[in-house]
Image 1 (cartoon, rainbow, N blue to C red):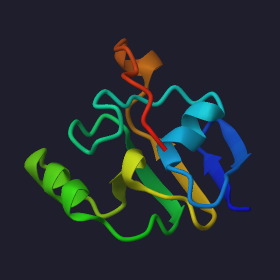
Image 2 (cartoon, rainbow, N blue to C red):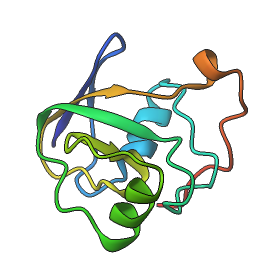
Image 3 (cartoon, rainbow, N blue to C red):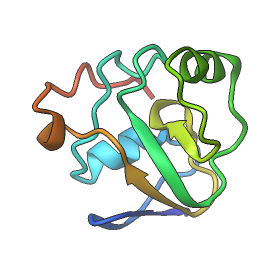
Length: 107
């Protein structure tokens, strides 16, 4: 079972293949996901500090490019399926932004 270390929040076990955004939310990390996990808003961005988030799909690449997010280690947590150990830093949270998190993404 992969482990996800979240900067400032702890280390969590993740079900193989589960979306990272759900792993974060289910373990008390107040990650934003305003579009409901559909790669449209970029509010669920994380910085990958260690590990491999897997390949970037067309939808994720397009929205990151459109929003001017060009750092290779910044990804959308709604588009990452956890298959190996990761260490991440959430870049947008409910507590820091004051926004509502959004609709819970589907698995």
